[in-house]
Image (cartoon, rainbow, N blue to C red; front, side, top):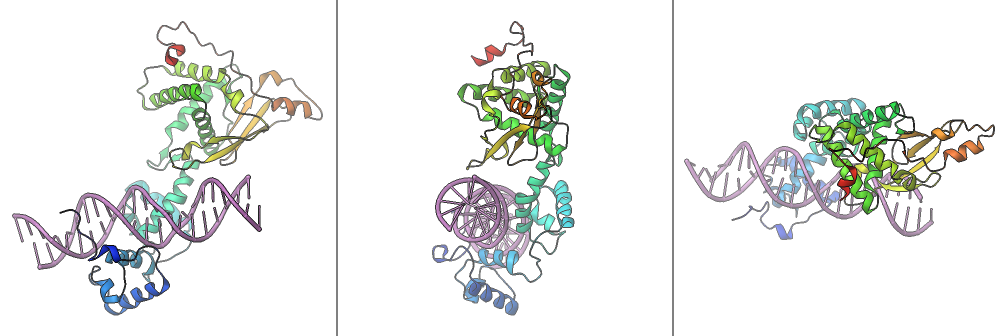
Length: 317
DNA sequence: AAGGTTTTCAACCGCGTATTA
DNA sequence: ATAATACGCGGTTGAAAACCT
């Protein structure tokens, strides 16, 4: 049995891009006779294509009632609204945009709109604010309330926050073998925190996070003044690797803060270096230089090794 | 300017559903 | 009622274009 072939002789049928001559044959035939049964059309129209290919070419490209070219803002907004209601039902969505084909809308979604929503901090699958962003924001709030030595998110837009999170993820996921163990464990814990299934308290997870940073990973990994390459979190699952350069520079006159930016993303996060708070230099040279030195590790986060419910070291075994 | 990387989008594939014999 | 055939949908691919470095 098996699948029935879509044409009489699949092996001799042409595939790939259509030539202008083929297009003309198809258009001329359909204008004269209508498409009728797609399976019979290629033979009648003198085309060495399978009927399925002809139907696709006609409906997605040659049909006279389709509009080509860039999508307008209104069209983009409508697609986003419809997608939030209908999901990946491209043909249903395209019925509301009669001049656009389902294939074109699907491509536009996958290449433009999805990315746009992600940068706005919106999960394109659910059309809701990304939970991981909320978690990171709360983590940063806690750090900020602490001793001030913590790496913290720059107060800013959702785009900046999500960029910061993606960069942190990228850092955590691109370390060496030992660090990889740390990061996968921490990622696991963060996921647990997100979906409420964590066996650890938020405080414990925060401690782990602090310990991880205190192990010097950040100061070894982020090299100020040198662009370091990290795999971008968003594209890690793709077969090809996407790298993003992380650059760090001073972002205030006294140089006690550093601003990290990423070549692929909007502004990411700032880091305050308390030891340099008093550093002032009229020429701003010393302060800048100091701000561009590796970050201080988080020695002061009081991780309690004797904690009876949890020990970070146990997790490394 | 060249070569490598990433993005875009037309076209394909397999599968589920609808229609026909 | 059932099997064969046709159609349509959504996910995926890969060549070409666009973009970097």
